[in-house]
Amino acid sequence: MLDAYLNRKTEFEILPMRGEDCHGVSALHGERFARGWGDGEFHSLLTQRNVFGFVARQTSGFFKVPLSGFVLSREAAGEAEILTIAVSQKIGRSGLGWRLMQAAMREAGTRGASSLFLEVDDGNVAALGLYRKLGFEKVGERPSYYVAPDGRRSTALVMRRDLR
Image (cartoon, rainbow, N blue to C red; front, top):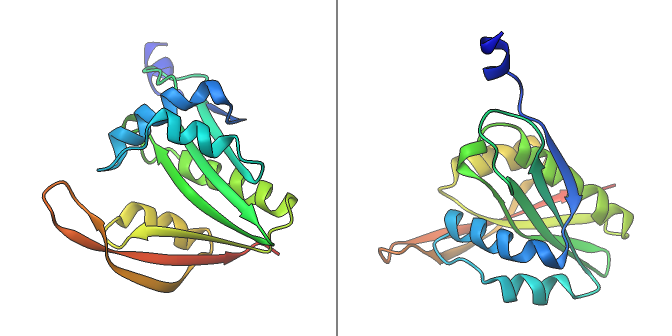
């Protein structure tokens, strides 16, 4: 019985991001990125008419993570972009990134976008694997775009996916 409880699949609900989510989103962003965005930055973006996002909240599992992940996107003139996405390290490899990206792609399409763009560090193997599985293709590079805390620079890959 205990084994069944401990091995139970973690479940999440994906909900539209709201202003009250900005503090938790900012905290998770700071855990996952060298330069975290403040909750004011998230709130400022989220109040723009063409910006939308989703948060993931864990509904089951042994170790509950209140805000398990999020994605923030923007749509304009028929194109959309992923501004940022993060999943808690404690939840990694659970399929949550896939679900968040699916929610963003659906919403971007509903808003009239025919393509979706994103940028990713060329050294982020897990993210690159996810984006390639979702059908994104590299369309450009930005050399020395990202700067790590130790000063090391890395290339941003610009990726695109058709939504129609």
